[in-house]
Length: 169
Image 1 (tube, one colour):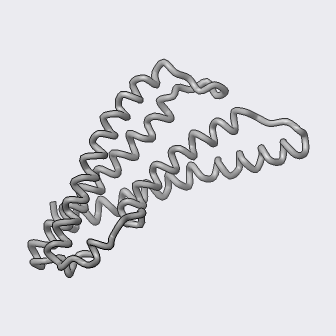
Image 2 (spheres, helix red, strand yellow):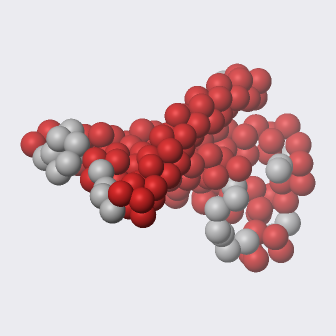
Image 3 (cartoon, one colour):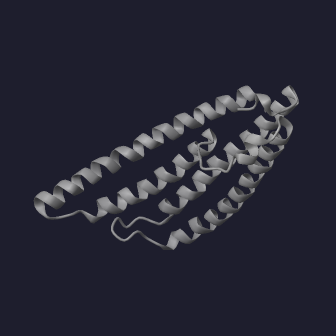
């Protein structure tokens, strides 16, 4: 897989994620605003809005985690990485991304089980299946696996082309 193909897929993935963020965030904001107005003006609430906003926030959080992972803006211990010479830095980053990949593979397996178990569970007020909640973990984890594969390929290609980590971002 060429770096141009990875960049193209990543760009399309970002567009999908960004539009998904908008689609999720707008109803959360509007629903929360309506709930606040109703609570303080009419002294009533609509429980379905709370539950729907919660489900959307779960999706938003997990998908945003995928984007943060790709940007490498997540919290990390980088002291060793920053002090290591280029080739050792490449190796540490490569091991790190393989560990992330392995953990995500376990998360995907577990989320498949959750999705299966969600068939018989329903959300209390909107009467929808819990699959809608549990699928967020599956979809987000699959995005993160794709990102970790891209990172592994980028490190290997950069190492082959530049013989060391000085050129890796």
